[in-house]
Length: 243
Image (cartoon, rainbow, N blue to C red):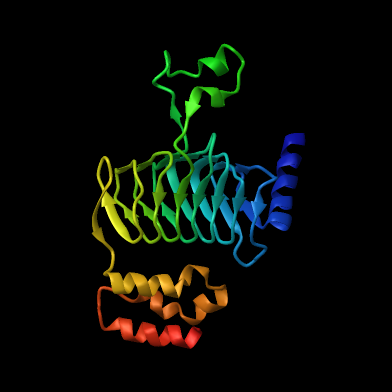
């Protein structure tokens, strides 16, 4: 009964003080930072275990496990089952409006396989920190509006550029330029989402930084097909209007 009241109290405090809503099958560290206090768009966590550094408005996490120095941008989504995001040495930053699919694995570390053993021997036998048994190539950064397909693995030190799409089943071992479509093992860029003029326009637009009010005023543009060249002139007019 005592545990029940502790869990209930934690959920109430998270909702009222952190703007984070979790269900009865989830847990999150209470010292997590929410970079937003927008109670209209809380962070929702369902059937997940999370130990975050920071979350943001409108984030949604379901059927996933996230541990370590992980930061989520605005309206980022992590969807399981089977999705694991784990940081042991470096940071993992997931940009605003990014979408991570099922059974995705993102880590910032590797086993030190060049040693006698690749196991966690220093941690398990010698009572040392587990960080002595792992190596890293640096933080993992997903910029804004990145879509990670199901069953993808993202390795340490990788930067996936804004607007990129990673096809299902890929293994990302190197940086991916912005607005790229990449697939395979190892993942390789097979196309750009848009031509250079449209990419330049989007970079100037910076829609991912807009306030909720700006997004609502211009919601019609998020249904436009940018492959259709006729929409660009109207978008330029819209950009001048909001500038």
